[in-house]
Amino acid sequence: MEELKVLFTPEEIRKRVEELALKIENDFPEDPLVLIGILKGSFIFLADLVRALKRKTLEIDFIRVKSYGYSDTSSGEVIITKDIEIPLDGKNVILVEDIVDTGITIDFLLKHLSLHKPKSIKICAFINKLERREVEVSLDYVGFTVEGGFLVGYGLDYAERYRHLPGVYEVLKK
Ligand code: IMP
Ligand code: MG
Image (cartoon, helix red, strand yellow):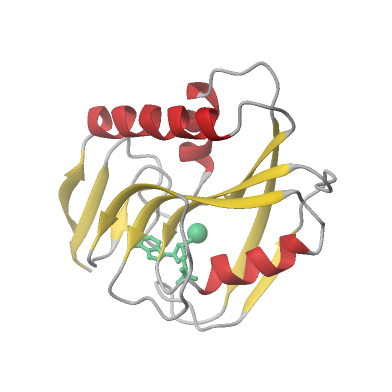
């Protein structure tokens, strides 16, 4: 069994998510706004974020990608296994990701979603992990920034485990 070290507590996360929601609300007071969650990792972050947004209307969609490579790294090849289902043309879109690591997934999805002609696309990442970045991506909203390490909890998994944990932990021994 892996050893886990607490990085962010549920209380710290709740505060930070509220701050992000406030920023998003200030930036996009007008409709239409669409939040797109990248499955599966973003499901808890997205659920908390949308409930912290103080607005009456909002659209939510999901996209799912698979990247080839080792279990905990991307290889550079990304394929979409479930695409978005609602139209994006003329809408402000926020792409919601659990953690940005190499940047390859976000870079790929930005290009893919641009084809749908949205009015704007912003990136909201719960965690920005710096040490393995390969592609420059500009992140508009970031929950927490870390240098490295393999993190789990709050949607993030290690071989499909630990997604349900309400805090974020670093896996010390795999
Ligand atoms: P990127 O294309 O390298 O930026 O890949 C990001 C994806 O890799 C995330 O959506 C996660 O699925 C996965 N990933 C990267 N680092 C971690 C981590 O520390 N914990 C859990 N998943 C991670
Ligand atoms: Mg992911």
